[in-house]
Length: 125
Image (cartoon, rainbow, N blue to C red; front, side):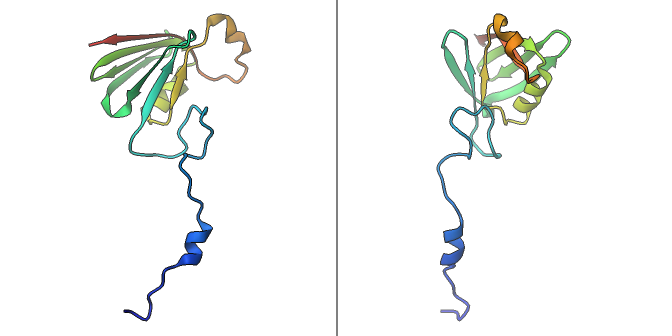
């Protein structure tokens, strides 16, 4: 055994280990890059569907028309709404975790200039 052998218990005590990514379970973004990522779509009527980012082939954004199109290997997804450029960037960099659809009557309550998705369509290929 080497004279320099050390288990470094003190260093391990200082680190905090947890099973979550540092955000609350309701957060819409991932805190850090990772290997396995999913994108959850939530409709205003309570329906949900998730997709794995590994199967995202391409994305298209037309901010003038308020449309984002995402092509997964098994589905086509279309999102419509307002101020979608930041949402598109978050999906492109795979930090967006949840996309929730908001009814149009609630758009005036969005004071933060966040992206607002008002329509979600998913079609199988």
